[in-house]
Image (cartoon, rainbow, N blue to C red; front, side):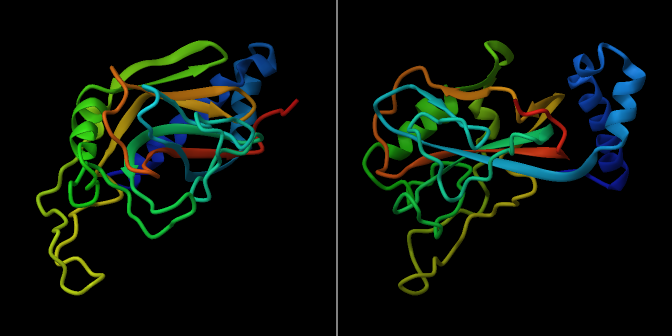
Length: 239
C-alpha cells in the first residue's frame, strides 16, 4: 500500500477494521459492538490482488474476474493474475489500471505500462487507440450483486507518461538504451476513498467501459487492474 509514512499506514489499518465490521454488520444482526469485536480478531495484512483481461477490437466493455470462480470477458485466468480467495476480503485503499503487451498467453517477460509507448505498442494504430479511446475517454466502474458501488472514474486518472521513456534504440540486441521512469509504488495508482471492501463470497464485477471499440489491438494485449489495501484472511462465509 502506498503510504507516506508509518502513521498514515497505521491510520489506514485502523480504518480498515471499521470497514470490515461495517461490511459484515448484517452477520451480527446489526450489533456494532459484536461486529467490531469480530473485526479486531481478524488476521490483517497489507496485500493486493491483480486481475487481467484481454483487450480486443470486438467489444467496448471489458469485465475483470475478482475471485478464482469468476469469469472475465474472455473466460481466462492468466498465470500472472493474483485473485481474491473466496474466504478472504480486501479493504481497497488504492488501485491502478495498466496495459501490457505479452508475446503469448503465458508470457512473463514484458512489463506493466502506464502509458501507450509506441515503441512497445508498435502495431499500426494501437498506441493511438490506447491513448485516445482507452485512456482519454474510457471509464472504470464496479458492480456487486447488481448494485453499482463505483459508478464511474475516468481511465485518464491512471495515465502516467514518465519524463524518461523507453527508447527504440538499444544498447545491445536485448537491452534498451533507456527504460521508462516508473515507480511501482505510486505511478498509475489513485486513491479509493471512500474505501471499497471486496468480499470474496460476493459477486464483484469491475469493468472498463469505452465509448467505442478499440480501432486496433496487439494480439495478446491486456488491461491489468491492481487493488491494494488491507487483506482480512478467512473473513467471509462461503456457501
